Image 1 (cartoon, one colour):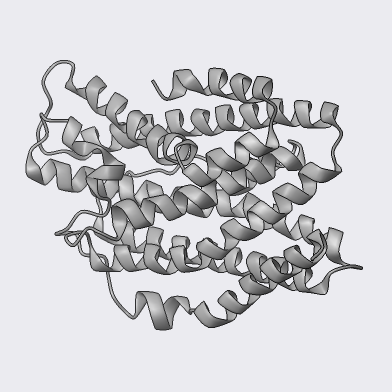
Image 2 (cartoon, rainbow, N blue to C red):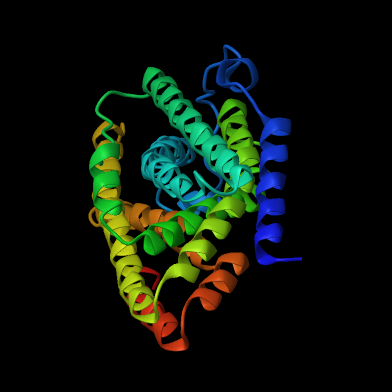
Length: 309
């Protein structure tokens, strides 16, 4: 069995799953419901709110909802550049494997649907939360910046994101019984389609890796390090904005030093959600080892270590 045949079969598997799992935002997910603000949105395994032991239970609940709103907005953000990148990758199959082409077109269509889903979550969150929340990064600006990097680096980042999506749902969101039902359903349906997207990410990353020279791969590793650094810049910006919003709308003032602890706690949680959890995914580690030399891998680890301390 040739490499091409194996790939074709994996692309076909993703098409079959896409047909089987296809869902509609209104009919299957929202179902005329609203977010339940009596329950948290994110589990502590992602939010890390229990580390902020000076918060009262009601404050922990509300901070979970602030984080959950940002979590949904972050996925809406990254899926803009992911959709564009995968649509761009499809051109390599235009006059070739039509099974692969269909799989990537379906991938792009689903990413567009996910963007609309997360816009709906933002509107639902806005309806039940105090005014003043801001999600600062804009999808088009971030996509333009990300897509300036090499395709290898963008596909590596995309694979990282899709894989930590799986980890978040299976290990943190799915097992929790007390988070808001609609919020949990949003990520259940998101996970169903993203599980196939992660396979396509691997296939396209491997395809791109195979066509690069060793020198081009070395440059791409630096691009990947730069992309993760840019993501960290977004996290710093949004953590500060979320801390300011939470503190400004909280009924009580915090003691000296607690404002700073809150902001640091949000940044720690966001770095874990969007960087650390993906790097600890066994599948991503396996892929990264396969796609890099030992020296390149060490360079990546050294660059990211300060973000994960």
